[in-house]
Image (cartoon, rainbow, N blue to C red; front, side):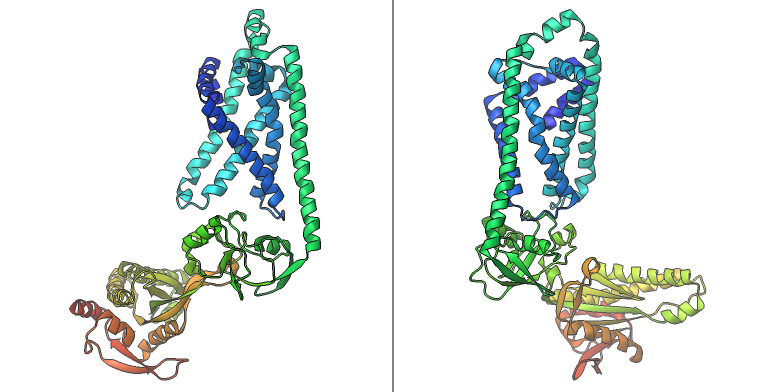
Length: 538
């Protein structure tokens, strides 16, 4: 279709250019290999379209999916006239048509011209939607999308303009006897008997296509009747239990029952956002297909995790969706950790001292500006040290280290970040020294241990973060820096893994809210001193 439209666009130059381009088209598509590829692709695609219509058990489509289906079903009926008038006429009667004959047909019959233009747009839009669904899951698509959209709009526009310009160029010749004798001879357009046979064959083909469509709908009805009598099963989700007919996939059953389940790719088994964890006995589950297993392997799915769009259970199941109902393409690329998993991490809480008192004495804009400058200084220090700023907590920050490194590396990075934070805040204070602003002070609490990492929140407001005892202790240590009059409190676990000398910092035992027993920590009066201690340990 792309080559076809490029050829049409040559009409913006001249009809002669269109005819010369058509010679290249004929060389490609009228050759034996080209014809085999073209018709095999056409029949395969059309057959898969009818099969998809049969296989689909619910019609809760997105607007794009519904548009693709409706346009796709109209294409065979619109394409029949063009195929019989050109390719079939050539094969049966040797009628070698070119642009002159087609432009005459559309110029003398506006209805035919309108249908041809409609077919051109319908085929193109249908194909572009399909390519969008295919490429949407590719990492490079977000960078290429605008460029592809420009081409998708420009090419059919140029093709339609080329057809219009070509018709304008040849329309003055329609009444010329000499032109008609050359271009409208039986060698090009066929005899009256030939055209009558083509018309009859086209009608039979349209009836055949309509019969296939009706047959698919009837077979769907028979399948639905059979499934109704076969019985139903129970699918238990965390918040409700639904009844589903045997033969439905988990995704189809959930959508029919109104249970939201993510399916970015439209249930085609491409994105993994519909994956669910099967709770209970796994022995009676149908084996995953090769394609499903390959996708599960790509996301490192654990035992018992299946794709909701591919799993068709035959008995009662309890299921746990692993992604929020409104998951997006970004969630596809984040990996399995977003669903929640235990991992070792170093956790840091940083707080700006005296922000409430400052807010009472300054304009709101000045307060927000100062807090943002502080958060920028802290966040850049965390990133520079190899950590990840995770949550802004008013005038403070939660940062995580070790999501992609070893425990020892995570703890060293967290200690190093304290020194960089001190340096960045010192620069901030120097920049603010010219105004009536007291120096910014801060407190840091650092701890490490096993945390639970995953998306936490409500539907689209879910955010990736970490929770657990290690996080609570880090928060408590940051609070205690006020009472202990120091800038940094680091747990013994972090100091040991970071390689700090046993006597590098004074040891204290403190109470951690919500935890039995004392927590051994090291206190740093000045965060800037930690950089030297870490270098000495190295």
